[in-house]
Amino acid sequence: STRSTSCDRTDSSQAAGSTAGKPTGSHRCQPLIILTWNAANLSRGKTKELALLHLLTSNSVDVAVITETELHEDATLFALNGYYTFLPISPLGGLTRVLILVRADLATNASARLAEEFMTVPGLSVWVELTLPQRRVMIGGVYRPWRGITAEREDLNGLFLQVKAAATGCKSLVLLGD
Image 1 (cartoon, rainbow, N blue to C red):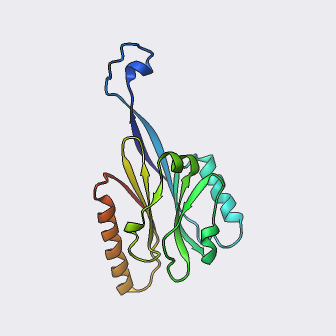
Image 2 (image 1 turned 180 degrees about the vertical axis):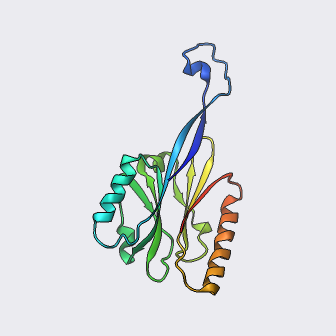
Image 3 (image 1 turned 90 degrees about the horizontal axis):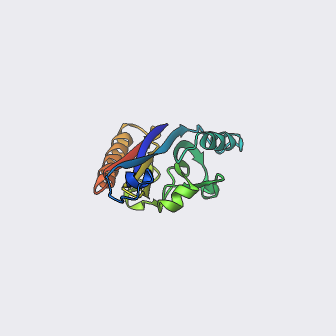
């Protein structure tokens, strides 16, 4: 898992209970807890979904990139209590192989949105934009199954173009996956 921070500007005089009201420019940073997990096939019953939910809730995970999900056409039905699910705009080989989960309250407060404009290679990645109080964060999840050397080059070139596009105008970018 990864820890990133989202910083809110606070007035330390107010935090200390002072009535002086002069901003001091201090920061209070809240950790953004991000997890990546290779599920090795979520479509085989509910056991892995329960294990994943336990992992997320017991570690207060804010965002999770789940790879090798191998979800079939019913991937749009995948849901975990307390999390919003973000999927690629089109599957790769008929399977959804990567998804991003964002804790429901964070997704609402940070106006989480699926950043479809960066998903240029079918099924290769999913991108989510979070708008936090002091910055915008782009989170990308990628899964690249081996499909031969030519496809590998094409996938990597496509991924580099996605990262470059996502990084434009956004200083905070996290890319996770296999």
